[in-house]
Image (cartoon, rainbow, N blue to C red; front, side, top):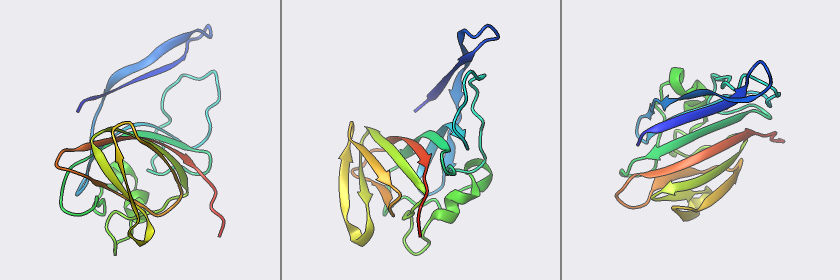
Length: 169
């Protein structure tokens, strides 16, 4: 899969313009597949702006921050695991969020909007509860523990928008 990102912004006269149009490099997620990071901001946008991605270093956004990416999961034995993820490319917080006793299981302080754009995936929750999602299915993940796995023998593609949320103790 190839990915392309087009960003719009404002020119000096306040007119809408394309400020970026280029391919996006895949970032490996060892044991799971790879992803294409499109946008990472740690605070809400203010307009007008140059339209360029702020490129926040963490994988998960803080309160009111946002992330936008596509994840390609490969079929394999067991669930997706990103314990060995390169923290420099994806953010050390991704590997740190993982439950090392249950590979792939994690919970974050985010509301995750996801749509399956290719293939089928299992979304596993606590106690082994699982829902199977197919191409075109969407899910809103509300800060709960979960993990993803490919259902079948072909890769699955999921596109996500994550918004940083507040978790109470």
